[in-house]
Length: 33
Image (cartoon, rainbow, N blue to C red; front, top):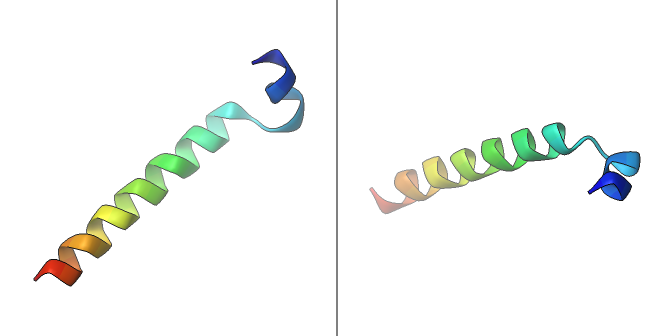
């Protein structure tokens, strides 16, 4: 994990993934209607 932190901020990656998942779920809901 220490190696990864040298390249990217894990907090930023985690936040990006959360937003991506939420966006994806919203998109699925819209398509399902």
